Length: 218
Image 1 (tube, one colour):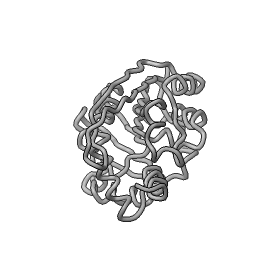
Image 2 (cartoon, rainbow, N blue to C red):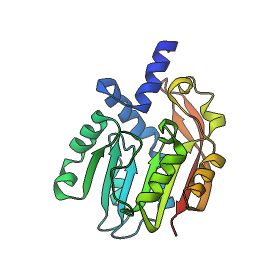
Image 3 (tube, rainbow, N blue to C red):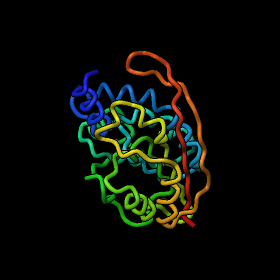
Image 4 (spheres, rainbow, N blue to C red):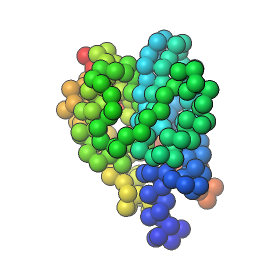
């Protein structure tokens, strides 16, 4: 890709839109599956939990989340109108039954009351937060006492080598994420680093190191 195409690709990853955004969402649903599973494992979901996911994309992974326990309530939050519509369409039966709800927001203030959710998950979204420390405080605000947050992200040392991250990404490392969660009043439960094989746009397999940080609200 040339420089202009790389910039547009980065923008689409941050805020998928149009036909290109739908295609990227399908790709992300596949390439993020390992990270999503790892973050879900860190949540220790139990029966009756009310879940929040920040940046769900097309939410093709919803069945995987709902299969973790009985009587779960899923809530998805997006900045992209196209992803909000696609996730709602793709999971229309769950929306109609009340098992899943999807919401739009502006990317800073979460449109929910204090202490609303038992589990919060977000995968590969932290690079696009306008103020990561403030967003961690927002996530802590809407988390119930005893609840757990899991954040999955690629480490800065790896992400900075990707050419499309130079414009629209604010890269982070795990020490920063731990600090922001602690400043939000949360207790770190675990920090797990993993490496997985993912397919690039050209079809090559590469090693992607990533981290899952989970924290609880006492």
